[in-house]
Image (cartoon, rainbow, N blue to C red; front, side):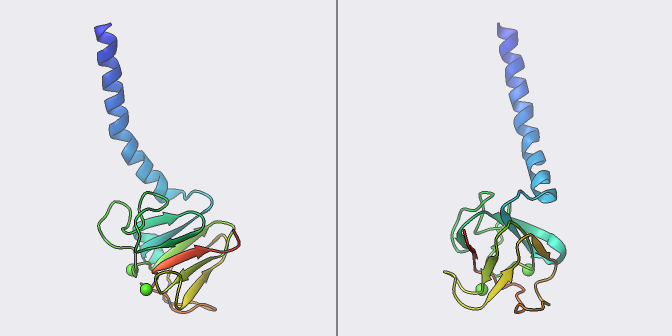
Length: 138
Ligand SMILES: [Ca+2]
Ligand SMILES: [Ca+2]
């Protein structure tokens, strides 16, 4: 009985230690369907922050990956920092320059990506401007 308990403890400890790293790698390589992910730098580099349905003001805390105010696993603010984007949802997602869904906005097509928010056709230059975002038609 005593031996079994020790075994269980070791198994749990190992699982806890490895699962964090595995989850991080997964979120980087394959984005879950239905979310939009913002990236700190061009070409989907730097910090990542993903958001599910409805609307998010980036001055709030809380987001799809338990972030929102900061890039995943960092203390660097997402607001006014996004330089590339992947929209892995079937909805249009509007990125707003202002908080509370105000000001100039950028329209991200369903299932689209943009490796450089600076240069766009049909959208304003939007590097380091996003302060809130909203899914449309939900
Ligand atoms: Ca940036
Ligand atoms: Ca802004």
